[in-house]
Length: 69
Image (cartoon, rainbow, N blue to C red; front, top):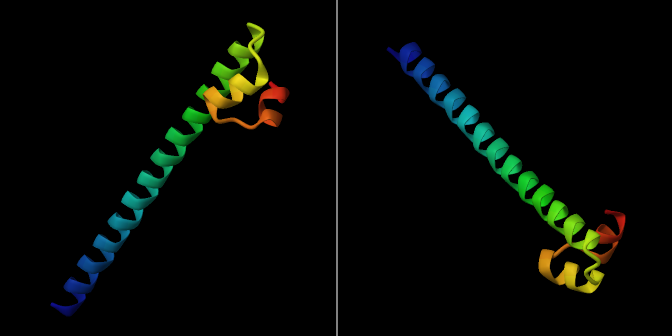
């Protein structure tokens, strides 16, 4: 019975670790998508000739990040 309970604990621990890893991966993907989207918006605004300071204010990117686009 003790071995069975230990195996159940191991199984639950493993499932919890996998669930945590998946959630962290999902959050990282969402964050990367947001950053990519902000950079694309900034790139488009820069192409239109909008002032860098306004792009920085609108996107939250740094002036250096906007300049590199």
